[in-house]
Image (cartoon, rainbow, N blue to C red; front, top):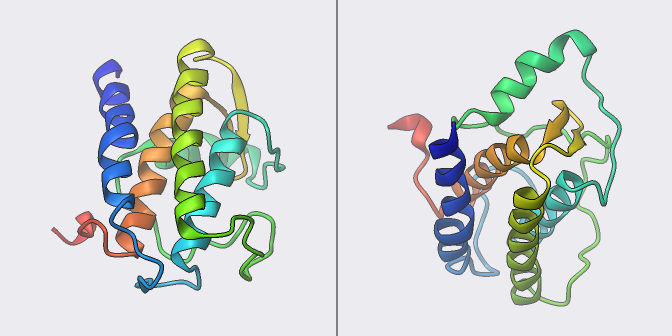
Length: 162
């Protein structure tokens, strides 16, 4: 498990940042309605959820949580067009003045999350589909989630189709 956590951390700190630096504001999504900047801002929100700065209710049934948590942490493709747990499936207003500003904030959030995770590995924060998750479990989810959106914008190959 430790090597998988290290792999996920390296992915976020190095590989994901390098690939997201290739993202341009005119990139087109292969599915969904997000623009590149909406996607980056969406990822920022998930980091805030993972350290408890934003809290959403758990919407999954209690009996489904173990299976859903296992899925969320597994390094496998996510299904496309997952509905928002808030029920708001339209684009939200942008919070940052530019793609570059959103990217810089996301990179700051990645580093802050990793620092938080190392200092608080067992602290729980709710995932709206997976329920209470430790920072280490969130790390594995973030890797999966990043890959999902990187595939969405053509930054990495769709590993489901290999």
